[in-house]
Image 1 (tube, rainbow, N blue to C red):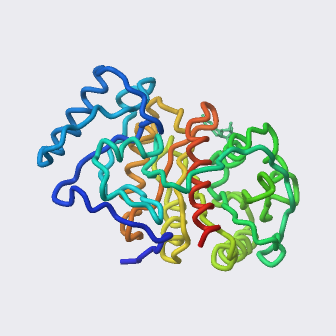
Image 2 (image 1 turned 90 degrees about the vertical axis):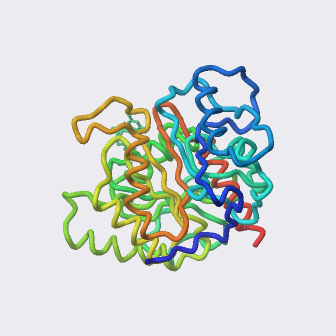
Length: 319
Ligand code: GDP
């Protein structure tokens, strides 16, 4: 089996004898609500999975605006626990309040300074050597053409057209750096899997992006974008497995999660496609990579992505 060393992480030592399920649509801060149908379903699920513990289980908090069918059950061993984060003393209920909504990501003490107050395009580079050399941490966004990368980038920085820069002729095949708050970078990499691209261009692109992934020392994590409105594509699975095999830290960002209607193409909902994707890549990773559901139409996941980036970045800066 291929092993991916993400940033070092702790594993939950609780509930090892069982596989309790948490739900991923929790708010960050406790927001006490009286039981509703959704809450009581959730409560009974947690209760039944924790029947070996004697402590009372508080009613977990979660976002009641989200329809019940969108809740994604998640087992503890599939959570992403950031480095330097101890969850061993958490109950399932307290841990569930620390999971970023629509993700498997546990919040750590490093999740701060997540707001974007400034975003500037800095430069387009043709290779890794030409990238900025000021040592600031960076996150690279990559995905199949049309996955929604530009839309997500614009949504993250709350600018309508910042990512257009990457779509200008001559820059689509470049590494495009955007400096955020003068302290870190978002990096837009060329989309892959564009059928019309000439063969030589694809080979060339492969060489330079792979070189970037393997040699860019300030790269904190790749954010691999996957369209959650359609079933997994072979090329996305290959991409994820390549990152896994090469131990490049990766976060899966599922896009277009607002597309809720059943589609002829397999007829699956976004959360089913998200689950299927996890299953298909499981063999390439020793531990579950972080993943998060987003939509640039509703801005679902925007604040959560920023918190996740903040905690990875702040840990990276300290170590
Ligand atoms: P890129 O080629 O990866 O940069 O993709 P774009 O950001 O240009 O988006 C490709 C298409 O998908 C456009 O028609 C967008 O309007 C659409 N799109 C992008 N993000 C979303 C999303 O979150 N939800 C929906 N429903 N459509 C989206």
